[in-house]
Image (tube, rainbow over all chains, first blue to last red; front, top):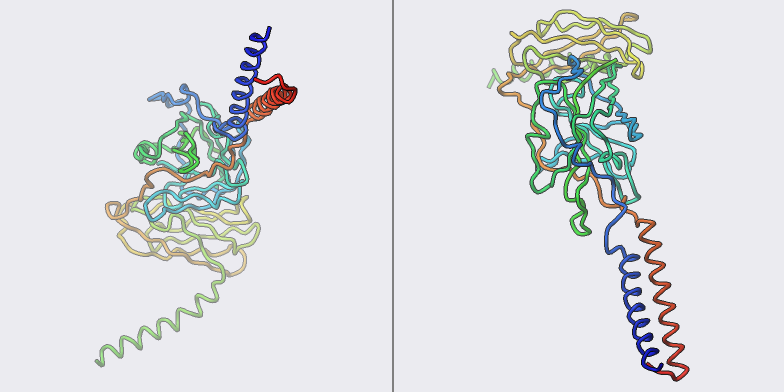
Length: 209
Length: 169
């Protein structure tokens, strides 16, 4: 009787210690969770030569707004420049519903590679492209342009690239048809160095109005 | 010396002549892109012609002739396009637009550069577009943590209770 009760006490003590430890770990955020969505492997598969619905190029005209209905994005666009190191600058972080486009590059709809970037989050919480990683192939992206036309793009692939080994040519390189890249932060997250890479959406022009 | 003086005087005169003309222009013609290779397409827009104001554009300086600026849906701007002839020489050219109503006129500069010399600079590397502020605690994880702490509290209380009763461990 006495020894079984002692056994019970030891078991309870062990459970208490384990519960205390895991409780502290879970509440202390030992594992970063509830992160922005990341694309599934299938979304990264390009279909080379997929020219379905490729639309003729539009004349150059600066973009003013981007809409991605599938992830409820509807945001104005500001002009972006390069940092001294040659990276694309990001739009002001404190405006959470604002995206930017690379002003010295191609305008969306024109032949070539147009680049749009926006924040996944800021210090306050989720921002304009929080759900970008959840976008699927075939989704529609619309860009309102200053000349009153709307360039309509179709998503070809969604991929995540590490910042340490970023495929510059694949993401920013010139294209022979009107293409669009939409970029935000993604990949793993570390408390010391932040997000480890970028989510990149590849799309091509399939219409205009 | 004398030559320099004359040159300076000439420049001063030119500046004096140009200044009032510029001031009278009020408003400007946006040229996009502002630098283009021969054969490239150019968009121009201006808001000076009012909400429904069309305009006539003149890109004769660069050899593209006249074109029309039509009113657009965007903030009452008139917008027009033309193509720079493939034979255009590098240089800075003045593009002019005259409103269809009234006699307002705006100008903007277009730089033509040889395609070899004018290459778009591509960005490189990743883009810093997040700080982690969107990473909230997972509600399921929070609930599990609270439950675990509750179990620990119950266990601790039980053990302390036993000890206080002198049953000892």
